[in-house]
Image 1: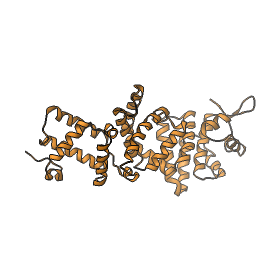
Image 2 (image 1 turned 90 degrees about the horizontal axis):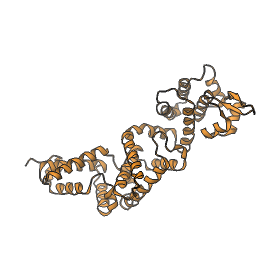
Image 3 (image 1 turned 120 degrees about the vertical axis):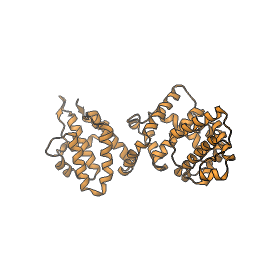
Length: 346
């Protein structure tokens, strides 16, 4: 497969003028020409272009890049190896660009020999991400991805299913998914709302980022953001942005297990004073403490918001019946039980 210069420019986010300049100085000469004289670029040319652009982002001069790329052939592992060695010479930038190289190696190549499409995608993503984030920020983002990946794939499938069934954004089902989506995004970005805002802005304004590497497509982003905006409008009546930043993360699996356990207690008619009930209530108390960073003021704000806003309750990871039961149990628990975190034998 050969690409004309205009197509290569379009797919990588570079300009035709830049590619012409690289050709004129001998840095990136196209492998062929069409009968009409147009430059034609091969997969090897695109691989070389990837190496050039990555080292340009390090601040290396074009002459230095030419020397680094001269000689041995252009195997993908050699390009990455050269970039890492160059980064070691540029100590102040080493951490940042290593993160991008790791993203490329582990995320795009996935252990297989990259084809032209892989290199083109890498170039396009580097160009796009560079508009919004420093390499240090990208390192944080892609390093933290493993924290949420498994649950994220589940949530994305559930959102698509809700969309296919035309569930409205204010339905309890979609609001619960919006809660999970928000919690995962905040956990992913380490509670950095400004970073999260920029990430969302990038996905809304850069179609090339949508649908890649498990990223949501545009219609899903629009659907979920509608539901999230409803929740945020209510939360902001009670919580500041600093409060939101300080929220802790509770894996959804822990909420699900607590929901199942308490539903079983309800089905069995277990009274609120029984040890099993108290144990469940203390688990909920601990999880809520984890969510609110063990801050009693933040805890009270969230409880007030939930009590006052039906839409927020609709998106809670615990059902209304379960929450009512747990609150009743906690109200009856002795101070010693609450302080120790263990139910008293009765």
